[in-house]
Length: 79
Image (cartoon, rainbow, N blue to C red):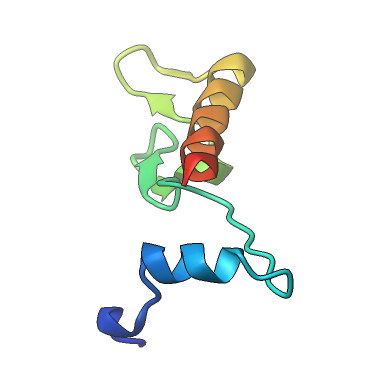
């Protein structure tokens, strides 16, 4: 595993992004974390699963899922 101190900083990424030779692609702000994904209590990556609400016994709607993902993408795009 790569030690965190070897990761690029945001300043380094910003500098790299100014180069015409580099294209930086991102895919998530904070959607790798696990969310409750089913009645069995499994936690799965938030970006790939609909959130399950144990109180209501329902999954988030397509609209809620799209909104959550769009908000995540907007946050990383701001960086």
